[in-house]
Length: 338
Image 1 (spheres, rainbow, N blue to C red):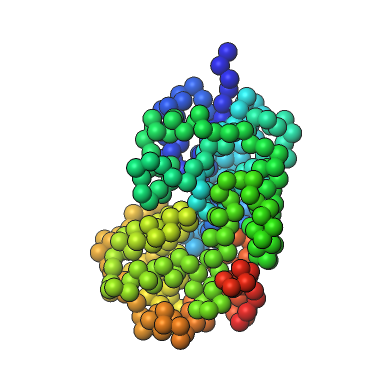
Image 2: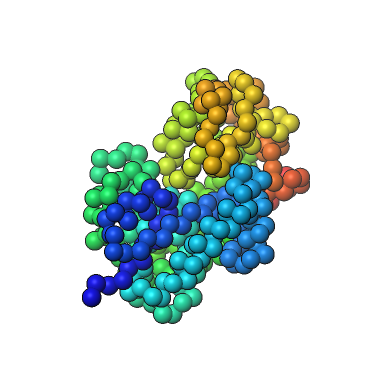
């Protein structure tokens, strides 16, 4: 009898291809975006899920009912993992995937019946693909070729995942920086680098910009650009974030809002929302740097003083007013500063 196998993947593109490659096996698509919105150590608690669902509806237009129905489908599939001989997790190197991976491994680690039955397929590059942006770039045959490179998840890797998720979901980011200084996440191939990139999402002490925001401003220094072109430039400059359209749209919304925006549109634009294709005005519009953005890039203004707030970075909510968690690049540590 062939072994029963459960595949857990991020995204329908990869999931659909694996369903064709392994028609006799079960594919569970995990559709979460844990790099956006509130997270907590026990994300699966019903009360917290309601809070998360309401935030995602307000921020991205994801209906509460849609989010909760999708979560229930994921939970049902994950709850059946013990019924399989092997569970294969397909997650690449970027922060988007690594946040999901450590969350899933942290939960699966608490289920002794799964010991020795977990396999991880992961990579950060693929021959001929530069930049490598993820498994979605690969065809079905190329994905199948990755499976022999999968490896059994060890106890040390499960422990690293538990510690990474607890620190990522904590309301104080200093614990995650401490883990990185201790090299406590090194058992997982790409988790430490992904978490370093996560900490660089916090506004920098020197200019108030997170890394993705800084790359956006630098990409616009030569002149105005359309959102799609800007997205391409930023993701190619730093593919390690694994940014999606909605996530990057939220960056653009924050940077073009607030009392002193960093970006200006050449026409009125509605924000991107879940389930709706970008309107023609969004596709045709162009973004440009404001005078304030140029002062920030020149080192004479602080972006964090006027950027819209209230968003989440892992388990940390940047408050609407008062001190912010910032990233001190010299000390490689988060600090609480005005």
